[in-house]
Amino acid sequence: MRTHGWGGAPPSNDDEAIRRIKDATHRCVAEHGGSTSIAHVAGELGISRQTVYRYFPSTEALLIAAAMEGTRPFLARLSRRLRHIADPGEALVEAVTYMIGQVEKEPYLRLLLDVRGGRSLLRSVTSDTARAVGRSLLDRSAVDWEASGIGPEQRNELIEWTLRVVQSFLLDPGDPVRGPAELRGFLRRWLAPCVEAAAARPASGGPRVAS
Image 1: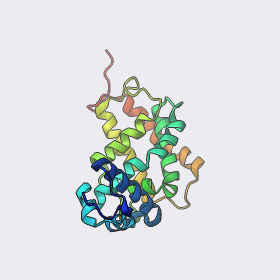
Image 2: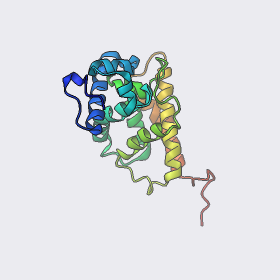
Image 3: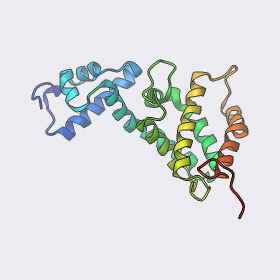
């Protein structure tokens, strides 16, 4: 570990170094948004880029690590909105509506999901990071997914599908753009019935056969 830089007070161990790098990343994202680079973070801390690379192999790895931490306040607010919703379709309607409405206000949510600027950290909605975000979303609701007939395999597909829906709306919000109430109505008509239909079918995709 380098003994210079760090504002004259080098970290005492690697855990502290990682924490301070993430804190600096939060400040840089607040200022630079999606253009944040390791050079910005290194400059904020007064250290070399190589020092940052010791802990994070790339700008993307650093931003993903910071984003997973930086989205926690958003997820906490989402949890409060979903904690009384036990219906699977309605839970997804509310989650998607709220996420789309918050993207412009949440720099890390924008980095993770918004592909309009050409730099989304979730370029693949089937990536491990995307699945982690999606699992957090589903786990915030009061839905008993197993009792609803949506098992682990279907939930993985539902996570992917939900993220694809969100990214689609971010790419093309519509003309005119729907307000929250209009978007909820649209999603209740088309998204919620799909979730209900999935709950009525086994993971293989075939119709359930009455015994």
